[in-house]
Length: 446
Image (cartoon, rainbow, N blue to C red; front, side, top):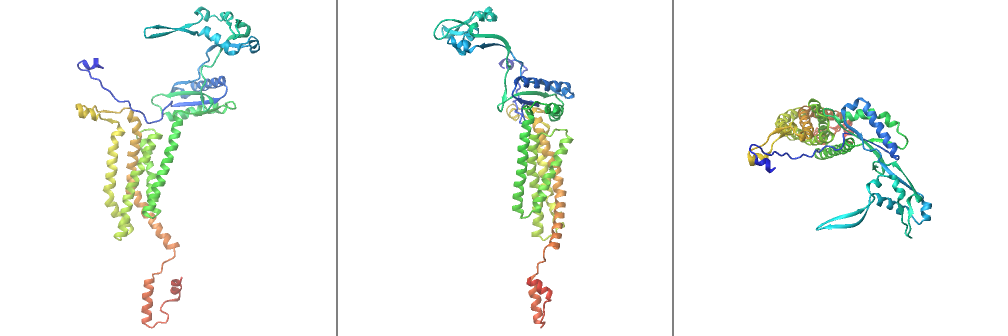
């Protein structure tokens, strides 16, 4: 760094590493669980071979499974009965072979402050020759020397490269990345379709499941779906308590649900994938802005009807004119504030204030993560503004007409008692013995 700074015309430029908020792990990851490691390794190789022969292989990068081939190892079989006759056990025999090949610490050598271990073991020429094991002797606790060949036999076998477990089950994992230019979710769906027959033909006791990004996305999707439903229910509960009505909250919540149409249209227009995490966060945040605009409009319409005595149509027209500017300004300011995040505009404010070097550039890794959320809010809010100014008044008028229809057809009419008393008094003054018709009297008594 000091050498670079000292050279004229060169300056170091650093950019902080941005942690991606999206799911981690391989784009394609599937796990096969079972008991037999040899069979697991064979099944993992078969799954890789099936994918390599399929059309989806050209979209994958670095396809492999994580169960390594077995490594050669020296297998020593101890005759426990004969070893017991000599007073030996498996530990004594194992430690003898281990000390001969790997060595044992005999002492330490000190050189000033440094300290070195002194290890004693067989010479290299004897360690590489298995026949030299026949010359080893095991010393029991009672003394004496017992030849190793008298109590054990040995041969070269193949051991496990590694044994991996997940939830106490042995597992082999097949992983792969997705090549640039392909959608990870679409490629994963092709992999699932390709391995559908392989999954159904697994031996009893063996299962295949997808993990990695797929598992994390499923968990995020479940959480965000529950959060969105909970937010809508809480919003509806608060609206019902404030408006003391069911029709007005129904109108507002309908505009919230229909605003997701704008989100999907915006992602299609800009050719962006539906990211479960970031797009889901955008949809949830969009609900708050849409609810606010609809509340402002409907609340003012209610004020005009109750305070000024306007009819439903007059209140809707006057309320739309008055609240048009606040709704439009709210949408415009929100959309403009998210445009830099959507297009990936980056400005170094610290460098701009300290050295007048803002280092403005477009794109970057963070734009790929935050872009879908910004596009979701921008497109959804633009479409929701149309819903607030057009669909919400229409639904308010229709539900108000339906409410009047239900009241006039199915609810009993209320008798104006004040008017009834006035008619009775006037009839008594005129000397009429039956001032009120019998049907009206019966209705009043009822």
